[in-house]
Length: 177
Length: 177
DNA sequence: TTCGTTATAGAACACTTTGTACGATTATTA
DNA sequence: TAATAATCGTACAAAGTGTTCTATAACGAA
Image (cartoon, protein in one colour):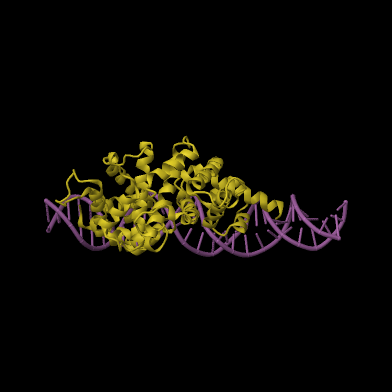
């Protein structure tokens, strides 16, 4: 990839996320992004077809560091759910500066959609832990939803609670037989 | 209130909600609302200062029937939480046609904010039921978030489960000592 | 029914935003 | 250095925004 492309892409990303922290997604104009990023109009459209696709790209890049790219050697596939949750929270806290703005802003909608998709995959592997007499899709939805809400709450509280403690709280909330 | 005002207001509401079901909130233009409602441009702005305030008004009117206006004689203030949840779900199902479109659309963000605010008030009164060793604000957030997610799931499932059964499932998910 | 009041329609307006196009310029890579 | 590719800046038509104005028509009270 051309250095200029990288530079432009990064400038747009930074500008966009800076704006996302200040105002709502749908109130941000392409013009503002261009001005903030100090990039030519045609250049922006050469990189991103629409504002929505830009948000897509930003979300993808944020989650890459949390779910896909996992270099931690101490996390195996045979870990229990609580450890996995704790580990995910640990990564989220490491990305704190990058995540809080976009997640806590009014623009967090799409972000949450991505987040829940990833969480669904993780929880599906551990459904057997929850031996509760409710429909399986209800169970999965409840776990994913409440965990996503928990993370949002955690960020609003400035992540005062440790990842381990938060994962413990979360597990405590639901009966595990 | 003048009959003409009522008529115009209703026409705008109907048009707006019809559009909300078809496309995302931030992709809807005032022009489209005007065309759909068959109302003059200046008339729209005489009623609503901005598109956001219109959405506010629509949300308010939707929740009025669920939380504020409660004519059911069989629901007292001394009811237990599960009964209250069941009762709320019953009202939501009664408003099914009015709610599903806006809640399941991509425009459901603001709607959910309203919903959670009302839920918070309800759950706060029943926190003592959940005798779990977690911070109180964590507990409240978890309950509100997971219940909101549950309702969304329920709507997507076309409300096949009965309100009583759904409230039971929800209570089962969380330890009550 | 009559009459003053009030909401609406419709047009005009300046302004912003959008998405595209083009040639000139500059940076990159080989 | 030379070919390549990205960027800039400008221009442009189209659409949307929010306001103002006047004529019209519907309203509510006497």
